[in-house]
Length: 375
Image 1 (cartoon, rainbow, N blue to C red):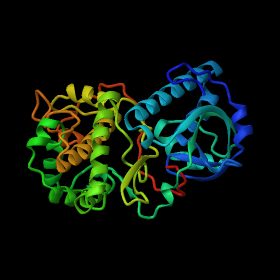
Image 2 (cartoon, rainbow, N blue to C red; image 1 turned 180 degrees about the horizontal axis):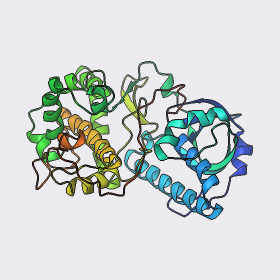
Image 3 (cartoon, one colour; image 1 turned 60 degrees about the horizontal axis):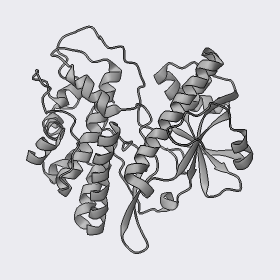
C-alpha cells in the first residue's frame, strides 16, 4: 500500500485479485460487498458511485484523464481515512485501499442507477465489462452480529418531517424544528439554548439521536462512551473541515462489551458524497442574500452540514460536554434569514438567477439489502 499522502499510481492491482479472490455476496445502499476466499477476517467493498464514475470515464475520457481522476480520488480518500484515524484511533475499523480492475454485470448496472442518474453518468444499461476503480479491503467486524448494538442512524431530519419526500416542513412542526435548528448552529448559542431533551426526543422521534439521548440517561457507561464520541466528533470537524457520515444505519455503532462496559466503532464514517462539507457550507452561507435561490447542490451541502452540526451539538448540549462545532449564527449576517429557512428554502420569496456553477449529486437514503461491514 502506498504510504499516506503520497501520490499513488493508477494501475490495476492484479496481486490483490490473486490474493483475495473476491466473490460478490451482497450490497448496501452505497457499496457492493465481497467476501475474500480464504480470508474470513476481511470484507471487500466497491463504492457504487466510484464504480459508476469509472465506467463512465472509460466511455467518455482518455486513459490519461481517467488515471488522473483515480489518482486524485485515491489520494483524497486515503487522506480522509488517515484524518479519521488520527482522531478516533482504534475506534475506526482498519482498512486499505487499492486501484483494481473490477468486473461489472447488468444487475450491478441496474443497482447503480440512482448514482448514475444523480451524477449524469453514462452507463451501458444492459452491458457488462471491467472498469478500473478504487477497492477497499476492511477488517471484518463482529459488531454487526450484535443484536443489541445501538446505531447512531442519524437520518435526514428534513426528509423525516416533510411531506411527500420534499423539504416542506409542515406548519405544525415548523416552530419546534426552527427553534432547535437555529439554536444549535454554534457553541455560544448552544450553551445559551433552552432546548430540552424532551423537545429533542420529540423532534427526532424514531431516529438515532433520540435513542442515544434516552439511553444516555438510563446507562451511565453508555453516556460516558457517547460523551467521548461527541468530543471526538467535534475535534474531527475542526481538523478536517468536513462531516462524518452519521446519516446511515450502522455507520457508527455502539456495542456492549463482555465486561458490561460500552464501546463504539466507526465502520463507514467517511462522508462519500462531498469533501470539505463544513468549509463549503460556511462559504455558501456567507454569500446568501435576501431573495437568492440556492442551486440544488449548494442547498444539499448546507443541509448536510446543518444536519451534522445540529445532532453533534445537541449531544454536546444534553451531555454537558462543552464541545461544539461552529457553523453559523442563527441568522445569516446581513440578512433576516435564519438557517432553518435557508435549509428548507423558505427564504426564497422571489425568483433570482442561480449564479453558482456548483454541480453534484442528489442522494436519497437507501435501505440495506445485506449488511456485512457495508452500507
